[in-house]
Length: 122
Ligand SMILES: [Cu+2]
Image (cartoon, rainbow, N blue to C red; front, side, top):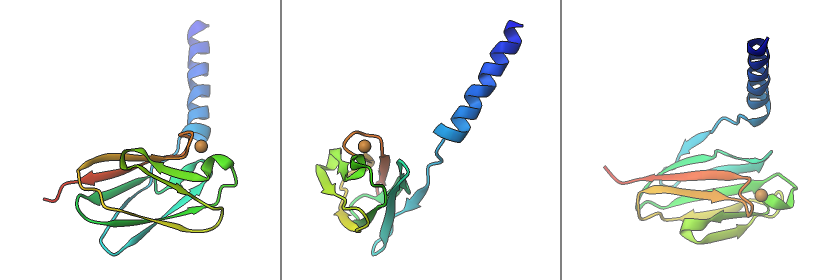
């Protein structure tokens, strides 16, 4: 009886995770001269993982479609960048990551989360 209950709970947990919590991470590769569009909606950045190469400039065009006040800024803490995102108006952020590494970006409260993954030039 205990075992059946445990399995039932595990199944319920899995269903909740799958339908409500699991968000696939979409990723994109930044290329010189290419503007990457990042949608801000439904609690996620899309794409939320951006690959880039150190020493190469990248342009990110954020488009906020979420009315929640929480989404009104995007912050790159490690790069000291903080930008307002007016609803429905694209905001381009140009970055030049010098060092390889992971740079996070997020809303003020950290509900929206993304990663800029920078690798060194081969
Ligand atoms: Cu937030």
